[in-house]
Image 1: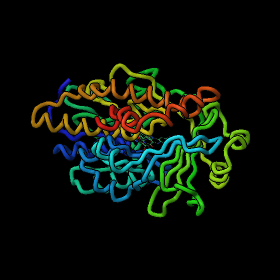
Image 2: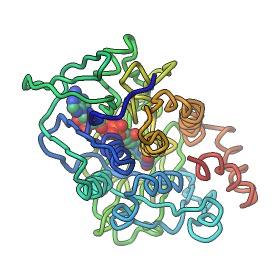
Image 3: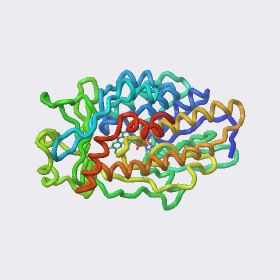
Length: 376
Ligand SMILES: Cc1cc2nc3c(=O)[nH]c(=O)nc-3n(C[C@H](O)[C@H](O)[C@H](O)COP(=O)(O)OP(=O)(O)OC[C@H]3O[C@@H](n4cnc5c(N)ncnc54)[C@H](O)[C@@H]3O)c2cc1C
């Protein structure tokens, strides 16, 4: 369906997807009104990896310079066996990697990335972001779409971007039966001081264990250590920790307070658009984070939204083109599930994995990542 350019673009949810959508509107000459449930943007969440495709999406919505200022540049990604502690593969992130994918690889605290997007949004008078504004209901007619907030006030717009996250109320209202599903794993997150003796602590370290995997990397100016442990069979137990090599045991022992998180995904939908409402980010396609691509997909959604709005000019915009991203996002979902299985493999599967990862020539290893990092 096509819509006439006159009213503002409404955005429900002011997370990474919501602010990115507002930036997409602003760089295309449109006004955006963002309604965020939370009263204040807090330092929630932990680290995020920002692959080259996410960097390119940030450039397209005009937010890369703000993000570059807060992001950390890890020199390498190191894949290790969690039991033996041996390095299985080391992937250098400057040089050939950056040249091949056309953008750098970065990491950041989620709140710092969000803050950078908000800083970019503050540069646009056409963006208004309202905290403490929970969207309660939405309605649509031939002239536009309206939302009602919990305080009873209503706001009208041309279209509505539902960027209200994995548990999106708007998705569940318009797509009945689309509640997110528990994927079976528990994700434990911690943020701690960088241990003084940690070798390669400035890198993205991925430890592959039996039934679990662990990722850590530095975030922020203080280079705090963001640690994520995924228990693929359920809980984080003493048994998991005891089977790790001494180096990983030390890191886990120093993690302090773990925050458990259920891994979830949104069931595949046949369209992300219904009338004047489009889902964007996790509300459309939230998935398990083992490929580190959730925010990246939200940013790519927003970059496409910017293109659609810009290409439309003064003509009506064809919102349904957002669905063109469905095959790519479905592939990311499959890759996320598969990466989790590979990283947590046991017995002969783990031995075969290590062998393949160790023996694969660099060029072949990088070529296998081109579909995700080169495109967007
Ligand atoms: C452990 C872990 C590690 C991850 N690592 C990576 C990574 O390395 N790289 C990567 O790219 N991604 C990663 N992700 C995924 C990434 O965090 C998410 O994909 C991304 O944050 C989704 O952003 P979003 O804005 O769509 O959703 P959210 O961040 O959930 O934002 C939704 C917003 O909507 C608001 N909201 C909800 N309901 C309403 C309402 N009714 N009215 C108004 N506002 C509302 C919420 O308050 C919230 O602010 C990871 C995720 C996890 C759990």
